[in-house]
Length: 141
Image (tube, rainbow, N blue to C red; front, top):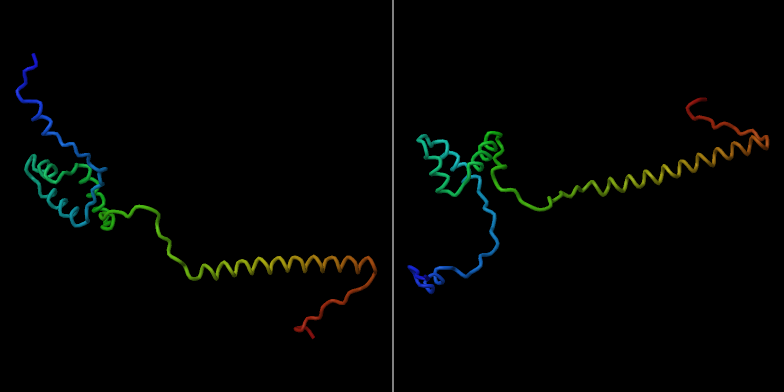
């Protein structure tokens, strides 16, 4: 009982006590993807595609995705996407547009007030029996 083919000390020496940092996601360049697709398309013998995938450490799903992207003609889709919030281009006319919208709202409000004042003046003149002269148009003589 308890006989072992190797001593306990040797087994402990084989283990690596170092803790690996968190894994990083692999990123593949567009050139690499195109090169692998060319190699995969040239594999004609049975099992040669599997050998290629094992040698490169890839999955068949990688090839499927990359082929679809290549067939769609989206070469930029073959390059890795930048993660995080997208940058918005600053439009120089946006500030002026907002300023003009505020000015338009302010003037519209003043026009509504002026129309209300004119309506009240008409009603007061009707109540008092004062006839108002209609404005003369410059175009009609």
